[in-house]
Amino acid sequence: MTYLAKPRLHHPTLPPNALGLTRRDYEGKVSTLCAGCGHDSISAALVQACWELDLEPHRMAKLSGIGCSSKTPDYFLGHSHGFNTVHGRMPSVLTGANLANRDLIYLGVSGDGDSASIGLGQFAHAMRRGVNMTYIVENNGVYGLTKGQFSATADAGSKSKRGAVNRDAAIDLVGLALQLGATYVARSFSGDKEQLVPLIKGALRHRGAALLDVISPCVAFNNHPGSTKSYDHVRAHNEAVNRLDFMPRRDALTASYSPGEVIEVTQHDGSLLRLRKLSAGYDAGDRLAAIHHIATHGARGEVLTGLLYVDPAADDMHGHLRTVDQPLNQLSERELCPGSAALATINAELG
Ligand SMILES: Cc1ncc(C[n+]2csc(CCOP(=O)(O)OP(=O)(O)O)c2C)c(N)n1
Ligand code: SF4
Ligand SMILES: [Mg+2]
Image 1 (spheres, protein in one colour):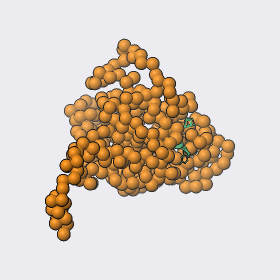
Image 2: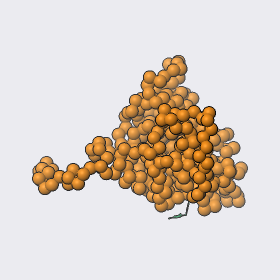
Image 3: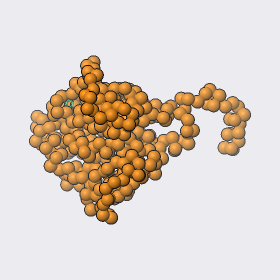
Image 4: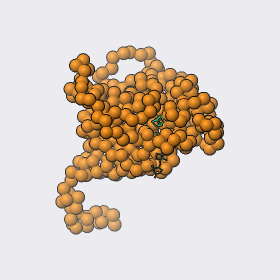
């Protein structure tokens, strides 16, 4: 963590959003990560996305685990709620917070070690429960904070900086999330802000579990020839299935496209996802086909990016549990414990 606050200067030409806030209002403290670390670019994309969405910083809750990636919530959204949890435990703490107060916008920030190793069980249950959150994995294939050991997302056959070859099979969090029932699944690259910012905006406006696996090179330990998570490797093997334009509302449509070129998906809040197809025949609404497509391209060494799957009509954990609309932490004792007569009625219904 850092104690270096950024100077509060706002350049007079910085444009304000609908709330009168500039991008600077969405920043955090000065980053202490290595210069060139992919994670800092993801923080910048988050600042841009939240500013463009006119999100009220006090309505955002950012939670993370442990790792260089999990340190980053200190470097953006300095006026939002934050909780730096224990290694691999972000999903359960976030689930609890979300159960207590469904009114906040939840952002989980994690690393490949935090989510695919120690936190794999927690990751799985957040996805299958449909916790309403944007779950970002800043994926560099190594434990950056503890000096570059292979993580569980390192590709079999990839080489460490010192030349050791990883023999273990890689865990693909995108494939797992699809199998587990996540309802917005995307992969991107920290070096492609144009692709990443709309994907973050769509995820923040999605109801349900939204996973963003962002390849984010570690310049200190995993950016050499032989790594499959280096800037050069990802740029050379990046295969985008589509490009997303996020529109806050349907009436914001401007450009026109030929039929078949663009797919439009309206989310529960009226926001519009406009998907420009880059891969012929790719259908982001077909979960099984997406799993097959990702596995086939992965076997060829390609890094498939874009919005890989979305179910715009998805429900979330509160829908599954049929909780009341009012946040549970606002209910009075009388509403939470309505007395023995109400209990007797419920028991009678179950009998
Ligand atoms: C219970 C526990 N086990 C191990 C550690 C040591 N540790 C700290 S960060 C980390 C891995 C972080 O890797 P990742 O999540 O990929 O983050 P990165 O630093 O690469 O962004 C480990 C093993 C810890 N802090 N707590
Ligand atoms: S060690 Fe790697 S992951 Fe950590 S800050 Fe440096 S470049 Fe980023
Ligand atoms: Mg990592």
